Image (cartoon, rainbow, N blue to C red; front, side, top):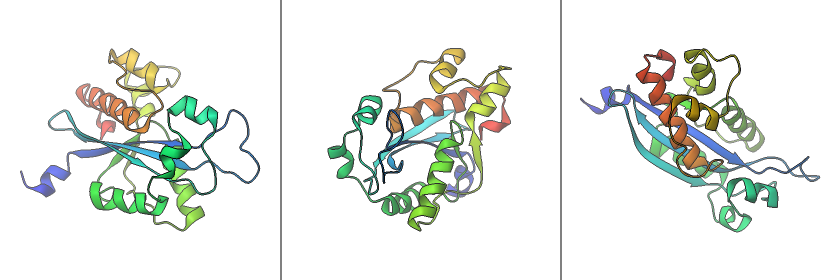
Length: 190
């Protein structure tokens, strides 16, 4: 199988973590991406091929104690990350995000990228073929309510691997749900 044919079966599963607060953001601060998790899935092979993590340096906010408790990420850690624009370029160059279909749990990740790209004048790194895994999962399992990712893993009988609310671990777990959907014959998985 050549690279072009192989690419037709690959999906980038993405999960982001962003600066957050227990209540409203402090004056002058806005939520910004601080971690991008990406797992490459081969739908034909039924495998998660690679797990990636990019730390992103916030410029219009700081990591709150609430955010650190939730994600484990600290201001010092993300302060050494890439700029948002450099992270978007890396996604496009290293993971072909503009060419391959991609998936995230819901619309949050897609919307956060769109907002931050508009605010910073950065080129949006993804193509139009996006799957909201939560919607596909809810339909495939005939659920009345859309579950959170951890609950969906329980429904599917899959383990939660790593730390919840960590971009690379969440992308890895969402990728397991994508493969579960593909195994159930759900075309929305890719």
